[in-house]
Image (cartoon, one colour):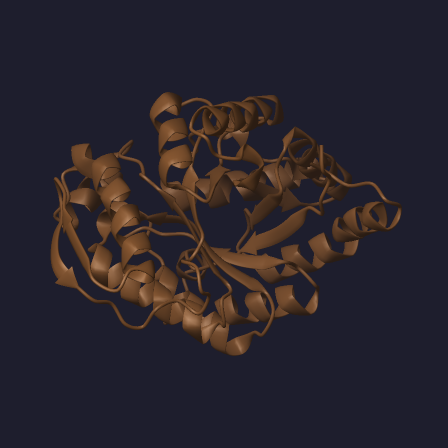
Length: 331
């Protein structure tokens, strides 16, 4: 099996700047984290999405600002709630960000949750029946890919209808913007697997343990082969949440408080982490890479993302850089 370098990115604090309680929120912290990530040689920076249940800066507006302040680092959404958006408007905005960044954008997209009352109300606020999330997401992806690559698009779906639509601007790259779709071991896995293989350029998971993630990788490869696609051509990403501290108990307390503030509840408690010593974080990252991840997106469960990023760069990244130099790679 071909080995390749592990790509490492960090989540930008588009929600964290609101959780810090400053008035007005210090939104420039998002840009400073992005600039520092690029200076430190990370591969990518990412932003999450939510409308009202987990308030934050608009994801694509934030990435447009980051594009203007950086030159090399990849830009992505992890994950964009595609069903919230009208596809023509979203396609234009994404293409604009891709142009501004000279082809650095990746859209990782998901169906989105409706687990809590706030999440359920979020869909109502957007005028989207939550039972239509998956179907709308699929049509959004189909429409955007066609708008980016075809001269004129006519589309008749269950949720959206287009009649002779021509989109400008187009993305920077000759092909369309890469779209990765959420795919997890634990939830609705059959439908997610089918969606990735039919519509995606890759997949992203957030809740799986390394052995579970390895199973998803194998399932995606198998489904792709059945569909006549090369499973290894699909990008494989995992989004992990960590807190770095020499004192594991202090790390847990800070991370737990952050997650509860972020979501309103600490569900999936056993799937987050690790919280604590940098060696433990590096080991978990290695386990996901060995399970098949090509891209790791790290969220710091802390209101001090710059401090966490500096610790990460000082005590975690050198481990992986040394492994690259020694010839060890992951697949």
